[in-house]
Length: 160
Length: 160
DNA sequence: AGTAATCCGATCTGCCCTATAGGAATAGCA
DNA sequence: TGCTATTCCTATAGGGCAGATCGGATTACT
Ligand code: FES
Ligand code: FES
Image (cartoon, rainbow over all chains, first blue to last red; front, side):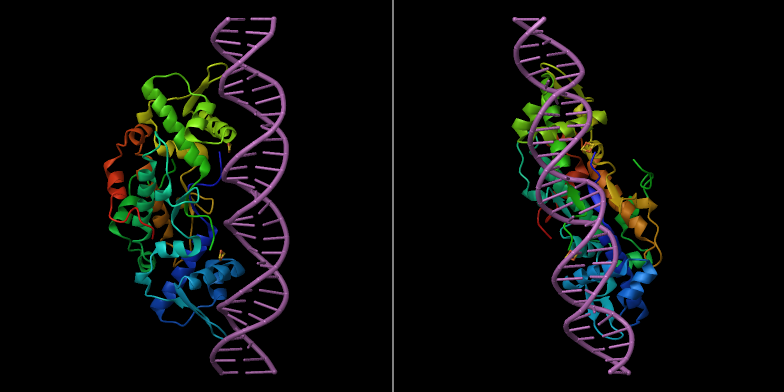
């Protein structure tokens, strides 16, 4: 058995989301830009690694940065207009791939010829959760209805 | 940007599913056990690699094997009672993890404290697709209603 | 000038994915 | 008994990338 899970939320992605949530909180409080150091110490993230991740987020246009004294990072848009899907794509690229290709680019011989439909459904299902959940929503604990429904199902919290 | 996608269906998983579909077809046709060589040549898979994968599937109890002349592999249960989720778990372990841990085992500091709910929803969403799609369903092109709905949405087949 | 940040490139460690090789064990058949 | 086809097991190689850190260059404010 391999060790790479089909769905693996990497440290980089996890850190990126948590950093973005910190920036979202700062946006609400109307305080100025937040330094990497501040985020790192409050969320217990490795500082240098975090710096690299914030660079990715800046290059993707999700955050703005200010250099020099009293500089730091801030969200480029209102937290309600940034989805987790945006963050995922900024640090990891496309949400879902099959052997390094986009799901709909796979071609198969029978009897596997209906597989692309399943792969596309998997990706669509991910998008429904990640593209409709915003930073503001996570911050306030107000998630989309269907996300709440998914997470509150009987054994959604149990292993399988 | 990293290269590991959040959802990455690996070669091993892809091969496993295609091999299982071949065995499902053989089950319908009531022919005997299928050799690794036969599967490999018909689905264009690397034979030795496939052998290792079939070993995983056997250890997980999804397929049975017969050694010696005219031996090969066969599904251990009817194709309608084996889900893609079963196959995924057999070759890759748990469907979804966050930094190597189960989604509900993550603990966060505010303002990230609502994240576990989202992670659990992501996993639940995956389960809804993979655990309810069976080999028989993929073989016949008869997928669950909500899977068809997901895959037939307007831009489900487009990049984003 | 001094200070506090971002920014950039290089580097290190180890793991694990993909794939192959070689042969031992097994089962049917002539 | 020997022949053949096949699973089964162990070992191995190559490459790539995740995770993380260092040192310094650059920028901006006071
Ligand atoms: S490749 Fe089979 S145990 Fe992992
Ligand atoms: S770590 Fe930033 S480009 Fe990948």
